[in-house]
Length: 50
View 1: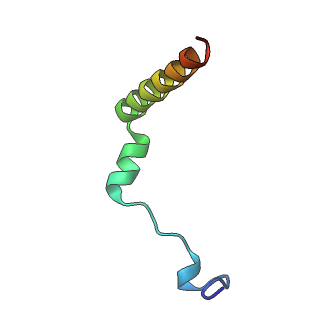
View 2: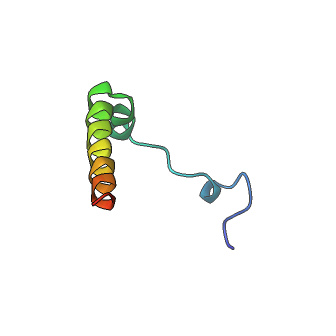
């Protein structure tokens, strides 16, 4: 495995962009994702209980 030694530049994961950080902290975006994920789970549960 090349570039896997600690403390080298290639070892560290990329830092999130400003847009990514804003989306992660946005309550509006988080609530929308929460609703979508819950709807998908509900659909899956209802499908399995035919």
